Image 1 (cartoon, helix red, strand yellow):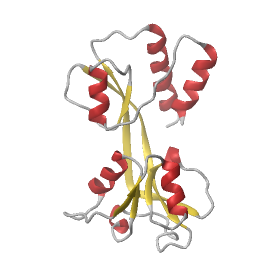
Image 2 (tube, one colour):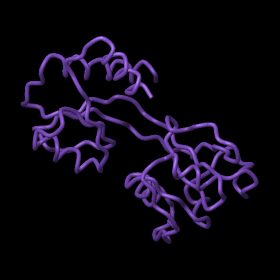
Image 3 (spheres, helix red, strand yellow):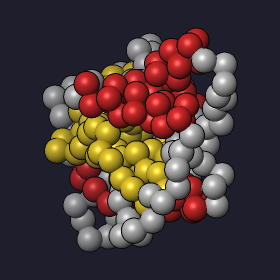
Image 4 (cartoon, helix red, strand yellow):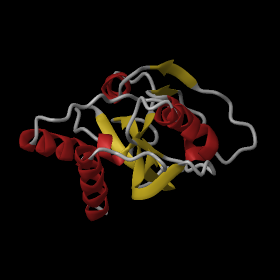
Amino acid sequence: GPISKEMAQYMAESDRCRFHITEGSARDLMELLHQEKLDIAIVDVTSRDRSLHFRKLCERSFYVAVPVGHPLSGREQISASDMIPYPQIGFSHSMDHNFEDWASHPYVRQRFICQVNTVSGALSLVAARLGITIIPGECITPMDGIVYIPLENRRQALYSCIVYDRWLSPPVWDFVERVIRSAREKQ
C-alpha cells in the first residue's frame, strides 16, 4: 500500500534511516510507543491517553476471500452475519476480533478453524477450500481459485499515532508527514 511505497522512496533518497516493522494489537503498539521502542504506529482505534497524538490517515474497506464455487462466491456483497455458518481462517489478532465485533448476533459461535501469521498463508488455505477469511482491501492479491467480495457496510479508520510530548528527529518526522499525505491522497 501507500506506506510501503513511501518507505521504498524514502530509502532511495536517504540512507540515514532504517525501518523496523512490527505487528500487534493497537494496545500493544501504543505501549511500545510509550516505551520508546517505536516512533510511529498505525492503529485502528484512538485512546484517551493525552500523551498520544492521533491523526487520521485513511479508511479502508474489507473483503471476504472465498473459494471459487463456494455458496457465497456469487454474491455482490456479504454481511458479517452471512459468514457465521462457514469456517473462517484468521491471519491476525485484529481480523479475528473484527469478525466477532461485526457479527450481528449477540453470541457469535467461534468458527475459526485455523490461525496463520500472514495474509498469504490465509489465502492459500482459502484457495485449498479450508475456509473463508476477511482481508483489508490493500491485501487483495489475484490468486487462482479465490473470489473477493466486499464486506457490506464495513470500513475501518486508520490513524497514525505518536507520543505527543516526544520530539521526533527531522528524518522521522519527514517520513511521518509523507505517509500521512500519501494515505490521504489515496482516499
